[in-house]
Image 1 (cartoon, rainbow, N blue to C red):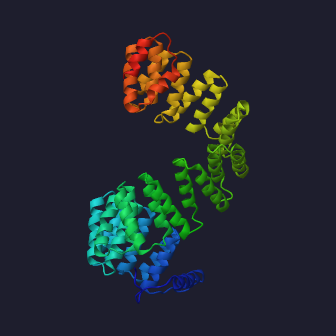
Image 2 (cartoon, rainbow, N blue to C red):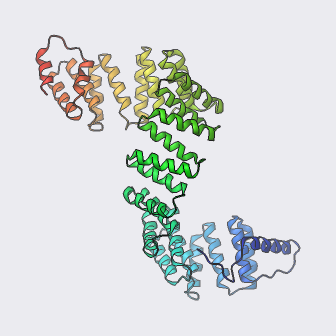
Length: 466
């Protein structure tokens, strides 16, 4: 941490100095402050993004202290903040000739070089700053890693964090950032290691437990993720993001009853968040409590009448109750509000199909495949509709267009096999079913649920022997 020294001026004193400075300006009085006071005045205006006042203070300070390297470095910082990187670098390189032991000069130069795309020079300048710095080395290294982290240069941030870690393995700031950086790099086991080292020292950090929960979720270690979110909530009961993640994790592993409890608790923390009520409604829907689901979805659109997910949820509940006309109207409203939502088009396609609006269903499924070409559900639904419409060639064309995109999806192969069989290509159908069975042995049953085979015992025997 930064140590106070004889030249350090606290925040309250800085405010007082700026006040006196501005009074003298307004009264056109003679202005005199020492160099350190001017540094703080300039810093005050820089932090306030007041470029005109910053430049004015620099000009006044330069007139009083024309040879002050401290004021010149502030001028270079002013250029940097304004985005005048070449001006900043030119001034810093000039100052470097006379003040080569000023580590703050090299810190600023490193940042300027980075912004100019000269990464190696940036690293060299930071390394120089650390080598000559008189402050705590851990702090200097962490300043560098923080800069690179904020610039989204994760590997460079890790380089300096690991140097810090070798010096002091108990620095909480370093341990936390190591956990975060390794998570960003998808080195999740390392991320867990450093978050756990952090928590060994400070077990009452809600943010560390929360981040650890995210890492466990990414690894599919859901029980450990849920435990981490529980610790986070125990430390900080109003940590709403932990409730969100815990509820979503429970829903993703189909533990909907538990998810309901979490989202209900969250709804008391975020009473004006329509998404919370939509998530609660979805969990009620999954547990066949449609009245409660409808109530939750309605609350979401009362909070925000433009919240598309709420209208879609109501549409799905109405479809489950076989009130298809009402369902269609609500899903259309959702699409009008958010026409880029894949799920909405998939949902309206299903409702159109149930209403026997086949052309509309096909169009909806095609729109869904356009919005999210990497999800198989819309392709499956489209292929199934085409199959039932006896458009066997269109099914085969669709599957051919997909190529190897969903080569591990047994359901697509089963539908294709059904189209092939029904268009009298039994040999090709058998080959497709053989591929499907390798992926999922139960897929053969799915085939027989799609195709009614009459007077073709040889084919049935061939399928059973696959």
